[in-house]
Figure 1 (cartoon, rainbow, N blue to C red):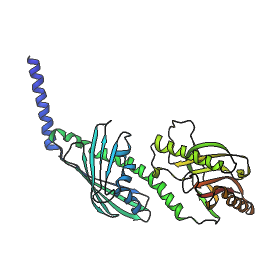
Figure 2 (tube, helix red, strand yellow):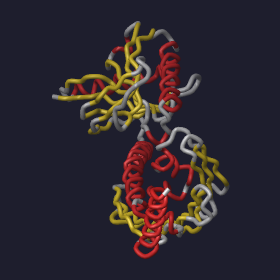
Figure 3 (tube, rainbow, N blue to C red):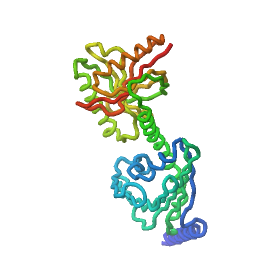
Figure 4 (cartoon, rainbow, N blue to C red):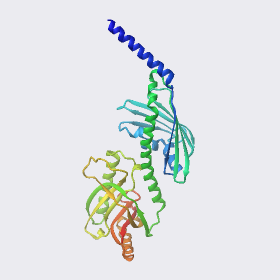
Length: 346
């Protein structure tokens, strides 16, 4: 009996010591600041923060769970927009609001986590360091915690900083593909041959052999594109902003053959394990290309390809494969909008 009394006294003393130390030495709320830079213009960065549908696609807090369910409320961007979320697997949930917006300069978020009636306030400031670089500053104020909960403040800042580090990597991938698409659309000049240096690229795609009769080749391309798109978006959970334009790679002059072999792939930022053996990764080395943009019937691309080949022969350049980048998704009974790239070298 005496032993249990001693244990009870020790437990009371330990709880008392913990309570006193939390009360006097640990703040009831935390204030901290985190700064990062990203190599994209401020207007493109800001639009990823003030639109919550964009925000949840790259912010690690939301992307790290496959079971999280998010509801979006109008307006979908800017001051007054909001979301609610629930993650049954991790038994968490909450609401998030944008309470203030100064376009391309400042946002204020209010986050209610679980059943806590006191919100976390996050002010985010954006500063254009240069035309192509933005400085982002997070100023975080956490809600007041009771004495018994204050131990959480020991790891709050580290947890928030880790989330930002992972989120910034995701954001860089999203903006990389988005900016590439915007730049390609802005650079389009149809039926003119240009020279372009293409950087290294990683594709996830499928190897195919198909008949070259009439419309059967294009129908085969559309079918395999849809198969590949569904695998990447549904099975792998990728969003449209996370990957680039589809690319078809084939021999430059096989449009004359009865059967065509090609690789159709979608650019991704990194390799990972695949769950379907029909798909594979292919790495493309940096190349110099003769390029031409073409819009029209898919069969009509051959004239543009011939022009690129003639240009290479005239300049006494050797050439490899032809890459057909679909600026607009291939779809049956529709014209194609594509960039044709002939890899050339001395």
